[in-house]
Figure 1 (cartoon, rainbow, N blue to C red):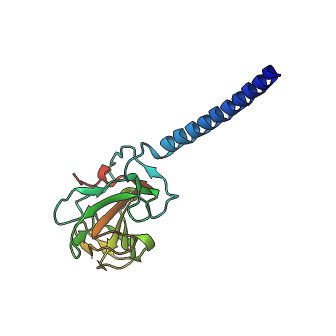
Figure 2: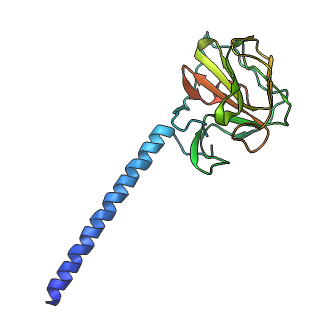
Amino acid sequence: MNNRKLEKRLSDVETQLDDVWFWVFIVGLLLGFSVLKFGQPSSQVSSNPTTTATTSTVTLDKNAPKFIYPLPQKVSVSSGFGMRTHPVTGKQQMHSGVDLGMPTGTPIYAVADGQVESARELGNCGNGVRINHSGGYMSVYCHASKLLIKQGQSVKSGDTIALVGSTGMSTGPHLHLGMKLNGEWIDPKKVVPLE
């Protein structure tokens, strides 16, 4: 009788262990998939969490514009490109650009010649500007206190396009600078001289 109870108990333990190993396997697969999809997890948010990001090295071809720094003086990047815990929501999200902290009213410059695709309120981005550049590039500027250009306008590298602010989903005055290449988010550090 005791042997049967012991055998039954051992069988139950083996079944439970099989269940544990199954879930360990599933969690391992999910973690592996997230690293393959998003790269190394880091402390970095996209206003659109379904957006994928490209973190590989960008080779500037002959059609690429010469990019410049978007502010009057260089500052450290306060939040980089990649996965991070969003400072407002507390959730892990893709940060599709870099944040550069500056006082409200600081001029924001176009990083290259281009055509303004939009200059308006852009949801979590707040007052934002999107500029199309040659070579398939687009620059995105978020959280402005004031927009100084209009949709359809042509801009030159270094033109003042907006003023730093804290509109949209923001914790303080800064420029969020995003860059796209052929419709995919890329790390602005790969093409704009941020360091």
